[in-house]
Image (cartoon, rainbow, N blue to C red; front, side):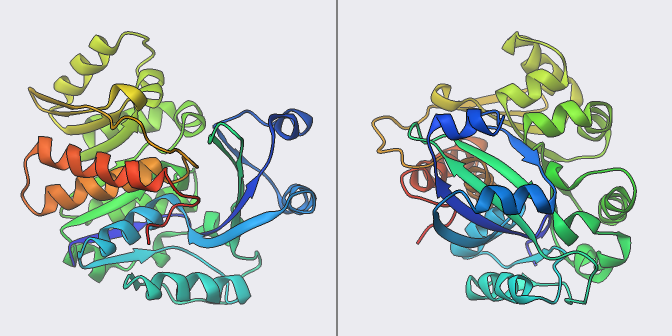
Length: 309
């Protein structure tokens, strides 16, 4: 298998709202907030559902890689409930090997309420459910060792059982890639993420805001210097400024696409990572990999949701 993703198995629930809805519920636009089951039910009863999809950040990337013709798999914890069954069916439909055996769990399958405002920004309210209880026993060691790259997401990292799952995966992988996922995650786990980027990851995906927060700077030249010093491959998306890949001393930039009919930014980073990793594992150049990531990202933001047709 080319790439094995390990991440939060989350059913995405997409809804359109206005800015006043975010203000009324004390939600910060363009961020992800963890909520409990009561909060989730309270919010979902006040919105109109546009679409539901088997999601999660790394799962979105893995589906994108599958659509590009790669042999991929995914590990994510769900309950043996209706949503858990739908989740597995959704991935298998996309030719992704789902490498987790559903069981009865104390918590239900996780859900993410994705609130899309008129400016196409998405604000996520995530009830992790059983997804956040992933542990080292859920990580299939045979599949990890058979995969060229293990792809992890920052959303999944937390002290306790999830950290044990991370450690088991990282310690037994041929190569490890990870997305920093969200500014919220970086600020919450800054020291741990910094240590992983410096010492444990082969490839890091992040946006400019996340990497700047990680190293406490507002100067992008300092970001470049930091990335060079890690001697690893770090890929930074910069919105309208395009993207940059730093591999040891090589710095390669790619422009963003212009004049797009943007509908929804959900999945933009996930599909960018899919495109880039497709290029990487198929021996394309850094420039070509960035261009493919940009192309995938540009396509997904011109439709609702994080799945390409």
